[in-house]
Image 1 (cartoon, rainbow, N blue to C red):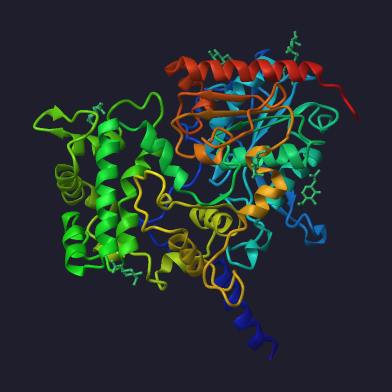
Image 2 (tube, rainbow, N blue to C red; image 1 turned 120 degrees about the vertical axis):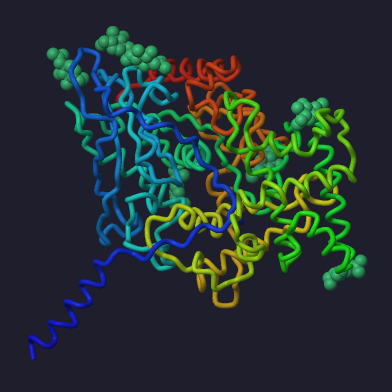
Length: 526
Ligand SMILES: *[C@@H]1O[C@H](CO)[C@@H](O)[C@H](O)[C@H]1NC(C)=O
Ligand SMILES: *[C@@H]1O[C@H](CO)[C@@H](O)[C@H](O)[C@H]1NC(C)=O
Ligand SMILES: *[C@@H]1O[C@H](CO)[C@@H](O)[C@H](O)[C@H]1NC(C)=O
Ligand SMILES: *[C@@H]1O[C@H](CO)[C@@H](O)[C@H](O)[C@H]1NC(C)=O
Ligand SMILES: *[C@@H]1O[C@H](CO)[C@@H](O)[C@H](O)[C@H]1NC(C)=O
Ligand SMILES: *[C@@H]1O[C@H](CO)[C@@H](O)[C@H](O)[C@H]1NC(C)=O
Ligand SMILES: *[C@@H]1O[C@H](CO)[C@@H](O)[C@H](O)[C@H]1NC(C)=O
């Protein structure tokens, strides 16, 4: 009897240990995340040496911290949160510089320990130590083994803020004196970009007793459900001819879709080779794809980026570029359509047919229900579905737009329902993110946090969610400097972007001087 019952138990154990099934591919319709730039990992061959010549552990050495699973209920225990650390430039009395790369597998972001980033530059200047901490539910830092709705109960912005604070208060850093640098004994600086920039701002407000100073780059502090603003810096900064022509084509697309004339609509879709897309809003959303390549641009990325190839396809006719006003609707529509048919469709869809690649209405797509960790896309979706919104839709009728107004927030919120069935209340199959609640709690772009530097780039597609948005009234102060460059997304975090642009360099230099001044004024409280 005992033996018999042991067999199914063993079978269950071996199932539990089996490798997860292969992850379904990420469909082409998935929107980009607000992430910091990825940098080449530091070479493992070059030893890390401290100022006195002692060889230190490699930047890529992984450390583990026992983090609380649920800050509201510590009795649930802890999980292993990964971090990376160096004391290359550290001298006793220097700041401890904590950073999370946010919604990514952080093992690829150890460059943010080094002086190729602003983090390392500040460390080098101020005798600091740098830390890269993986965000819960990303990479290998998972409170629970899967990414189910049940596990995501502890996947909230507030838990992530609490992680940063609890880490600072409890970690024993693997260096001499690493147990004597808790907040109060040493000044802690928090640095983050993009989503993690927002976390930095929120934590500076919510945990001002833990973090003494902060630097938030391209920080998407203002949660926004209808985030048509994503396309606004692109519309303003892209080549004028391309912007004018894209706006003309989109106005035409919207008037055809509004006509309900199915033969006109089919003709329009086939201009782009998208006649197989069943839903009109999927077609309208597909046309946003050409703008997402803007987020990959940096000041030193040159004229051959994918975004410029798109504009060249619309604007260069027989070797001649259009004037600033563009070529006009007729030519631009045919040229944009040909670009999709001849080049772009295959790039993003391979040989998949239209609805399989760009259709969002198949709730049985295995992409939605795959809950194995890690899966950064899924973990980020949860935060947008519940808290941030950031649905990329068309602008209101009163505003010019490069994105079709036929894409509404519900286009994304419906996908939340497929991803996380049952999560949004028994009567709701679509999400309604509580962006207002988030902005009330952490003050969005009106934050009153002190000793917090905001740095933004005028060409950053996420700028309308930052303190540098067109309509903000918070101008900053000496205790909350707002610095602006000609950069793109998080450009100022990278030292090499300061080489490419004098304005980025000046943002970086000011940031280092503010930090130097504040750190000089710091006094121990413990
Ligand atoms: C050299 O630097 C390392 C790292 O900061 C430190 O642990 C060590 O004590 C230093 N050695 C001397 C002789 O100063
Ligand atoms: C980084 O620091 C090293 C010295 O440790 C220096 O040789 C190098 O020039 C610095 N790099 C940058 C980008 O500041
Ligand atoms: C950094 O440490 C060195 C050596 O202890 C010291 O001379 C220097 O003043 C320190 N710099 C700052 C900004 O504290
Ligand atoms: C931080 O946020 C929590 C949760 O919303 C709230 O209860 C607490 O009062 C906040 N603390 C501060 C200092 O803002
Ligand atoms: C097209 O259909 C929509 C939804 O059925 C309707 O609201 C709209 O008035 C129609 N437009 C025209 C021009 O018939
Ligand atoms: C027109 O388009 C071309 C090709 O993309 C671009 O190089 C040029 O800068 C644009 N000119 C204007 C005035 O927008
Ligand atoms: C920020 O402040 C402005 C003006 O003081 C106000 O109009 C706006 O509603 C505030 N925004 C938020 C998100 O609190």
